[in-house]
Length: 455
Image (cartoon, rainbow, N blue to C red; front, side, top):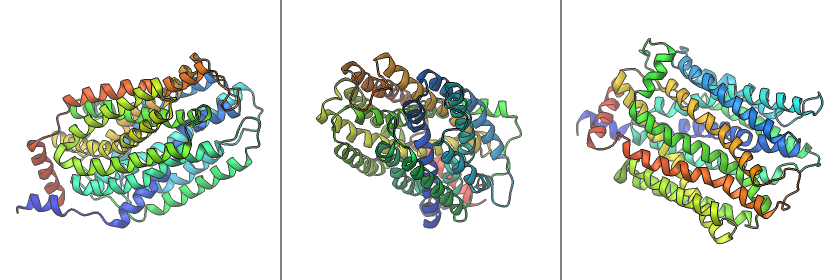
């Protein structure tokens, strides 16, 4: 066995590092999912009475802000030099502010409850929250690509992350619908729970930074300016194909978590059965993608995932009011979520590695930033699109659960699943043009692994 093959087989990541990185990423994502995955929109519009049009405007402005915020941070983090590394300072010292902003999101400002005040509160809170989320989440997101080089070693990290990400998925899907304050009720219990979640997230994220470190710290980052650096990302054809999928996954994750709150308000599908099907699909999906990644490769796995997920979304959109159909959709949604959590990060790692082969520089940060440039608007668009489509069908936010008209109920299904189905079909088509597969790419990956093993 030659040195390159030995490198591919023997690269290891300590269990403690995988555990704490995954735990921190889980709670960082949980706060974000609770806030941007429909919770903030629901709280401000349904509970505090903010106009849906103003809330949609906030999300659109937020999307514009991300066009500057995320690539800029990625560019800066690639050039950060400290004894802790390029990423850890942002994770460790940003965690306190991130948690505090999350906690104060769920308390009304003491300046009255008019529409203008609610608009400003939601806008300022979202901007500040996202600034620290970008610093922390981007750093956590790229850590596996700096802790290991081979897909085998990275895969072991992603398996841990997937296990913890079930918490990230479950909290907004299961916990929020159970604890959300109803119109006209006292929100104190809800606020206490959200405060406890925020404090727990801060403690875990801060402590985690003492258990992992960057293996790959290429100080030879190219000297090109930020604009040219961003343009260079889009010259990477694999990255362009990846971004179609990445946008789709983030849009779907956001709108599904938002829509499920409204779905259980208006339809009779039992929540325990639905989430049991979702969990079964997620576990089965993880096992499926882990087993089939090597024989099928990333491209084929992603294509199959998109086709199956698109079929499920279409069925829910049309006949989701029938419980047997809904349970099958929840099952396939779990398989799709598992693919998004496992296959997408591995694909992203390949894209970053290919960029290093092309340019000779290690640029995880700028790629994460540009990825956020594209996917953060997906969060805004998902929130805005759901509200607008539901409103077109006559959804009335002033009504209590179960009181919507039949047309408004159908509108919830359409707002929830129509756009995801279209995006998944587009992603499946886009994978035909993804270039990183086959024997030649395997050889390039092995050579890169050997290079960093010898650094």
